[in-house]
Length: 120
Image 1 (cartoon, rainbow, N blue to C red):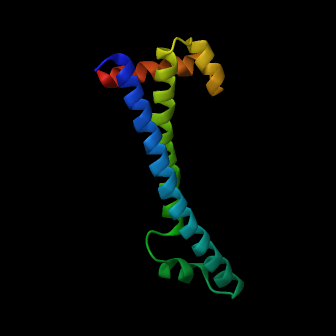
Image 2: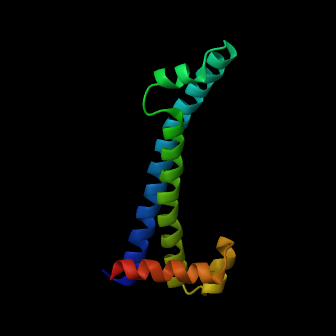
């Protein structure tokens, strides 16, 4: 597969990853909202937090939040790398990519080196 096709394939896979991860996070977020409302109501009724947490179904709210953050970190990292590689393949300088991403040139350079190392 040509380098340009490989870059596009990686970019499209990263975009699909973002779509899937975001959809999963929406579902978890709706569940988090429901449970937080229940938590607030239980606390307002004077129930002990330990009792509320013990009866909470697993995964608990704190676990759902951690999963949402981990999902975004994972798919976000892949998208950042794929976009950086694609922009570099289109001829943008590391400095230009860094400006677009709002990070240092060193961060983009490290990101590109890391992805290159993973491919070999």
